[in-house]
Amino acid sequence: MPLPHTMPTPLRLLSFALFTVFLIGLPIHSAHAADDAALRDEALGYFEPLPDKPVFKNENPANKEKLELGKMLYFETRLSKSNVFSCASCHNLSTGGVDNNPFSTGHKWMVGGRNAPTVLNASLHIAQFWDGRAADVEAQAQGPILADVEMGATQKLVLKRLGSIPEYVYRFGKAFPNEKEPLRYENIANAIGAFERTLLTPSRFDSFLKGDNKALTEKEKEGLRIFMNINCAGCHNGPAVGGNGYQKFGVVKKPKNMEDLGRFGVTKAEEDKNVFKIPSLRNIELTYPYFHDGRHWKLEDAVKDMALYQLGEPVSRDDVDAIVAFLKSLTGKMPDIVLPILPPSTDSTPIPDRN
Image (cartoon, rainbow, N blue to C red):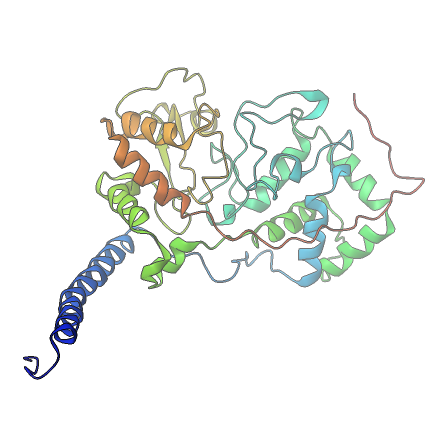
C-alpha cells in the first residue's frame, strides 16, 4: 500500500524500511519453517522419540517396591565377592551410565576385554552386551555378578549375603508378593532390570521430532541432514538412535587391530565375525571412549572412522563438525536418582573375599 505523501520524509523512510523488512522477513521465516518440517518428516522415517514412560516386561511387571529394591541392588557392592564392585562401578549414573575407561576393572583388579556400554536407554535395545548374548536387561544383569573378571561371585554367595540381611528379605517379599520364594537369583536380576528400564533420557532431539523447530540449532539441523544423507541413519536409527540391530565393524574397509571376533563368539557363524551390536548414540557426548575396544577418545575421530570403515569415504571437516553438533543434541536429561541407603550386614553375613 502506498505511503501518504503528506507524511514527513524521515517518518516515511522509517515506515518504508520497517514495511520492507516485514515483507522480506515473512517469506524467509516461512521458508525456514518449511525446511524444518521437511527435515522432521525425513527424520521421522528413521527415528522416533523416546517413550514417555518406561516399558516393562509382561513377565516382570513393575511396582514401587521392586523399583526401589532394584535401585538398591544396582548400588550394592555385596553382590561382588570382594564387596568392592557394583553395577554402578562400570555403569556410573553420574557419568552417562559408563565408567569412561577403555576397559573396566573388576575382581582382583582384572581388566575386561570390551568397553562397558551405557545403561541409559539400554532397555530399548534388541539385546544386551556388544555380542548380543543376553536377550534383555534382566538377562544381562545375571552375567556380571558371576563373571570372574567382573564381580567374581557365585549365586550361593550372593543369596546367602542378601538372605542374612532382614531388610532385604522383607523387601524381596514386597517386590515379588506372589512368589513362594521371592529371594532367588533370577529376582535379583529382575529387580535390577526393572530399575534400569526407568533410565530414559529424553533430549532436545526428541523435542524436535515432536514439533519444536527451535529445539535444535541450525548447525545441529545441518548435522542431522548430513547424518541421514550419508546413511549413518541406515544403522543408527529407531528410538535409541541405534541398538536395534547388528553390523560388521568394517563394512567397506577393515579397521586395524580387530582381534575381537564379536558376535561370532556367540553364533559361531562365519558371517558374524567382527559383527557387533550397533551402539546407541544417545548421550554419546558422555560415553567416551568409543567403540567396543575404546579405541577413540574424541567423538570427531569416531565419526571419521565410521565414515571411512562403514561408508567407504572420508567426510569433510565441516561435515564432521556438523554431525558432532547433532550428536551432542542427543545428550538428554539424566534420571533423577536419590542414592539409596543400604541396610547393614549382620553377624551371619559372609565377609568380603578378595581372592
